[in-house]
Length: 219
Image 1: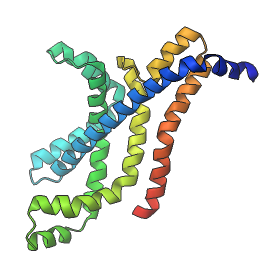
Image 2 (image 1 turned 135 degrees about the horizontal axis):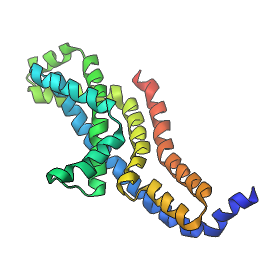
Image 3 (image 1 turned 45 degrees about the vertical axis):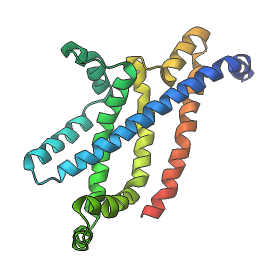
């Protein structure tokens, strides 16, 4: 056991700055992608409930296809495939867009469920007292929807955070890619990947606790 722990004392001062920097990249990647997925997901949910059948069917197909395609395939398509038609992203931007497009489909379903849970009478009452449709949605409906779906949204963010490790395969220098480089340099893969796993845990654990705390309040 001491042989296993000893490298942490011997190389800890060298490993810690590398892991902290990689944690920052992972956090920035995850937060950026999730913020975009919230915007895309809300738009998709609204379009799915739009009067236009063509638009509604398009969103339905998009959600079904994206949820059935591996995230890695989406990342490869954006980073390696699109340059073939003249569209090029750097690795970080490609990873953010890929994660956002993929998780927007899940977020859209959450928003759709939340919207369906709000009685139509509330919208009608808001319009009756002089609210515009936009004000009715942003001031009356959307806050209630967010309250309903906040816990599953946090769970979705944790899933996105863990799936962000796939960005290492398109050369984003996040936790997994940093860990791989460290394992190659120090020849201590078990200790290093355990440290990488703990980094993910320390980022995700507070959000998991928050989602559990909020779930009973939403119910």
